[in-house]
Length: 295
Image 1 (cartoon, one colour):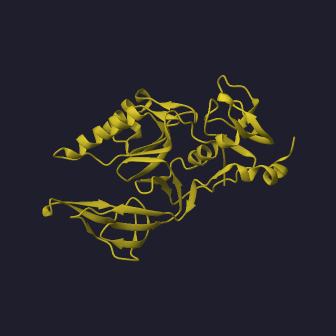
Image 2 (cartoon, rainbow, N blue to C red):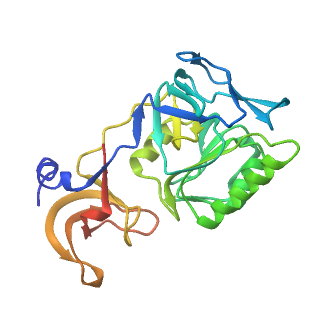
Image 3 (cartoon, helix red, strand yellow):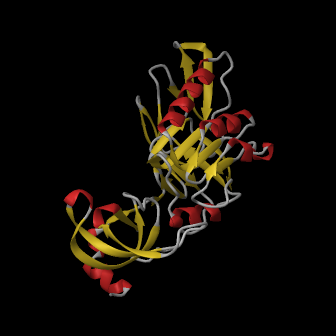
């Protein structure tokens, strides 16, 4: 068995590194054929500043101004859109649906493995962006929007729930009086995906701070952010197989190991952390391809 430094030298470079955070990320705000930018190159914007004007069928009488959800400087401006170099830090996700929004961040579940259900959303969450845990149901998204929540951040979402949300979003925007913008940021993908512990720790540290959910790239942007804590090199997360979502410590490489179906894969011995309420600490042999680490 080896210590973290030896693992870093011998095995760490074989595990895919994930870099979820970026300093001063570039956000892109698309312009439609009839839309008009209201900013100039190198112009600085603040949250709430008019960013662009959307025109209905090219008629000025049907115009709607879209406000910036972030603070930063206009770095790119062209017929296709506006690029803003955001202040602060960005947390990149996998899927975004809805519109870019801004609001104070609040953690709505007790654990990163929990699922946000409709009954747990209180009217006091109006105007906020909620962290939902491993999954959010379509009923919860409907209730959140109905009471004025601005957005939801979740580790995963079911394909059916996402389709239901997209259909609801289309109906909202097609109405005579479009609803208040609402954004959904999915951090990892489809299904039930517990939020990674380093990301969960960072999100809980942002509680109460104003953040933005952005469409392109799918991202949470925070200006007044808590520092990102360094993650030990031997800390890994399982991203595939029966132990999906669990995290632990990389102990040693074991060479090719025969997995299910007779497939031999380069593998490692991993000490998985206990997860309440019913998963004990244990050591498993796992394919290196099913692991990721954080940088």
